[in-house]
Structure formats: structure tokens, C-alpha cells
Amino acid sequence: MILNLSRTGADVFVPDGSDVESALERTTHLAIGAHQDDLEFMAAHGIVECFQNPSRWFTGVVVTDGGGSARDFEYKDYTDEQMMAVRKREQRKAAYVGEYSVMLQLSHPSSAVKSAAPEDVSSDLVSVLSATRPEVVYTHNLADKHDTHVAVALRVIAACLKLPADARPKRVVGCEVWRDLDWLCDEDKVVMPVSRHENLHAALMGVFDSQIAGGKRYDLATAGRRRAHATYFESHGTDQEAAMIWGMDLTPLLNGADPAQLVKNYVARFEAEVTSRVTRLR
View 1 (cartoon, one colour):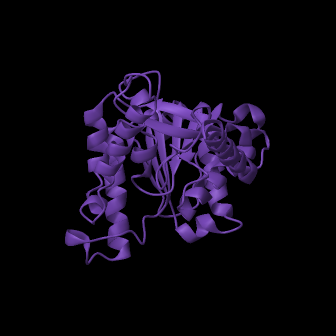
View 2 (cartoon, helix red, strand yellow):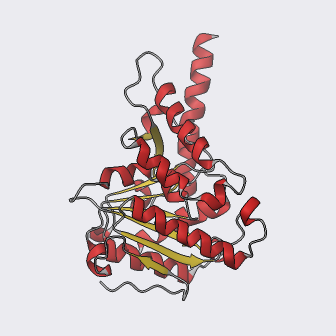
């Protein structure tokens, strides 16, 4: 299927030089994030599952254009246009390092993603999903505290629902960025080990110099979160993994479940677990 993207600034990059159509078709794991670097933080499980595996291929999608990002030091005097160009190059570098099948940067402004009727965003996502037909989709979780992240997750679900039932992914996972998912009850967590290729993860996160040197040590914070998850997951057993990521299962939304109710149910189960323990032990 031919990929049709609405924005003139959209960027399509195939790291190994394959033709775009075949590179899209071989995709098994698709990650759709709001900003450059979100994929490397939240969808590391998909990246490492596909790395050096000829039967699995990871494709990344960044929905927004990177405008308005924080900047300091070498980047403090950069205009929005210059910063957007830097972030686009950094995302390409990450795709090359991680051996992605395709890296798509859709270049929508955040305001368009958050609008009530983002027709261009929706059509782009439907086109990507139709061209890739992935087994699993990673996107943001619905309890994230960043408006653009939650908006992207909702647009992804809406796009999936526009596909025929047999063309939808088998699973959609909401991942951690601006709020982790440690609070989910253990039985509600999608458990994603990311212990392997620690050097690869470090390289992928370190590529985004404009954000790290710009005043945010996302690389250290993300690595620390993953290690903490692995250690604090089980109180009565030794660590089985060195690093783990939690996910929120969004797959029920592909069958028409209400997003707000889905999150409410997760929160209600957490509330019930906490209050039950306190009541039992007081």
C-alpha cells in the first residue's frame, strides 16, 4: 500500500536503504509517539525485540514537529525552525543505531494533534497503520500527564478503529514517559523486560543531545526508572531482570471500550487494592 502523508515537512527514512513499501510491509512492531525521543524512552521493548532479528522489524512514528522544545547551552539561541531540524536529525540517528525498519516523522504541530477534529493527523495514522499492519502498537498511556501524549494515544486508537477488524493490531500498549505506571495493580501491568542490550538503550537515548544538553537528563532518569521497576516489582523474590518497563493494556479499546472508563477501571482496582490492604491490616 502506498503511504500518503499530509504534511510537506513529513520525513520518511529507511535506515538500511530498502524501498519504503517493503520496509513498511515487513513491520511487526510499530511505535507511535508524540515527540522525538519518546519512542526510545517508552518503546524500548519493541526496539530490542526486533534488534538483529530478521523476522521482526520495528518501525517508529513521531507525530509532532518538535517545535517549542526546551533548549539551553549550545542550543539556547536556536530558533524553532533550527530546533525542529536538529530534532529531526537526532531521530534519524536513533533509527539508524536501533536498526529500525522505517522512521516516520509526520511533522504536525502539537495544537493540531490536540484539536477536537484532527483530520490530517487521523488520515496519516490510518495510512501508516494500513501500510504496516503491525502485530503490536506501542503508544502513550492514557494516564500520562502530558496533554499531547494523551492526545496522540487517543488519535492512535481512533485510527485503529477506522481499519477493518482483521487489519487492526493484535495488541496496543500504552507506555510510560511523563508518569510511570508503577501504580497499576500487578495483574494489570503489561510487563516488558528490557535488560538485554543495555549499551544499545544508552546509545539510543544519548543521541538526543539537544534535549539532554538542553537541561533534561532524560537518559539517566529513564534508565533509573527501568532499574527501579525491576527491583521493586517483587518483594519476596530476587530480581529476574535488570530493567523493566510497565505498560497499560489499551487493546480493549479496539473493541469499542470507552477510553475514560478504561482508565477509571484501572484506577478503581488500584484504589480497591490499597484500601483492602489497609483495612485488613489495621
